[in-house]
Amino acid sequence: MKISIKKTAMLALFIALISCEDFLEVDTPDHKVVSEVVFNNEETALSAMTGIYNQLYITAFSNGGFDSVTVLSGLSADDLTTIRTTNLSYIEFDQHEIQPTNSRNLNLWTSAYKIIYMTNSLLEGLDNSENISEEIRIRLEGEAKFVRAFTYFYLVNLYGDVPMILTTDYKLNALAKRESVDSIYQLIIEDLQTASDVLGNDYYLGERTQVNRNTAMAMLARAHLYMKNWEQAEFLSSQLIENDEKFEILEDLDEVFLANSKEAIWQLSPLGGGTYFTNTNEGSNFIIHPFFTVLSHLKLNEDFVSSFSSEDKRSIQWVNFHSGLSVYYPFKYKIKNSTDAISEYSMMLRLAEQYLIRAEARAMQDNLVGAIADLDVIRKRADLKLVGDTNSDIGKEDLLNLILEERKKEMFSEWGHRWLDLKRTKKADEVIGTQNPEWQDTDVLYPIPESERLKNPNLTQNDGY
Image: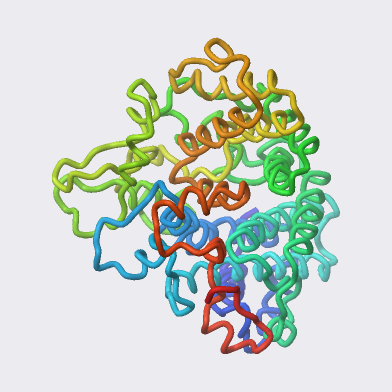
């Protein structure tokens, strides 16, 4: 059954209405009228969830583009840096002198809350609809709550206490206060647990671009790792690692970021961008054109590049050199611009992280043998000497440091992993502070955007800003 032109138009209007306004200044609840049509049948309700996936590929915080978590948090860490000294908005992230008026920080914040607003709209629409089967309702609830939890995970880790928006009520949202980190994490765990409980194990459309139970477990494993719930983190990551029918560590590094690669737990398709271009945003932004370099802004930190050993396949296949600018850049994605058939999807979650999660969780529980085994899976793929062969009696602290180092080299230029790792392990002062004499410990949190605080008098500012 095809969606009628009228329903398609109403669906497009619904998506536009719930994504075009800042979350704290939605002037009127006009979208509620449209949502009555959108959730009048299962087909349009499913399309509304597809619209959220598409918005994730478009919106700043999640699209791998210039104002994304990947780029901005990469600049805050020690893997990415700026090419041009005139790009002041990037330099503020690179030098940890972010101003509350920084436009990129504002885009990061508001775009994340737009995604949250969209998930809340979908959840309310499901609650108010009598024309959707229980099976579809439960599945869409699980998917929407996963996306909401995924988004809050980054907000709470980048900003600390943040408003907990659980409704589309514009009056309540406009004056929402910041909630504690613990409260936000409680919501994250609850939403992810719901998703894990109600979603199936399969990718119901045949591609790894929709979330399912495995996706929820992957984020739950990460959240529990950050919360230092080591036993839970190990248990959940094990579920994915042992599911070798669906997931595996690919030996060829150039296959990892291909569409529907077996290492992928969740990806986004460039089709979500709604254009003719079939390349990922990461490929477009990170790869420096051989001749037209003026639009390139990012490069890899030379100290980061030099930290790889010469035999590390990741430095050979995932790092490239631009001779004209004499800079290194991330090369995990191989296509800068294309209108051909899609070959790469943007990676959101992948199996390698789960091995590193389990290695750390095991080490923290004094299971050093198990931790070494997990770490060596990643090192073997990188063609490095195995810890089990060369340093099997390594101590716990040294092993944890080695796991952190492998996380840096494995997950660079992906979703700000390095920045969040430095923060959660309390090593930001040690690593960033030695590189930047202006570093202050309050720099571990980004500032609440000033324009948002002007709209909402209940929004307090983080220390140091």
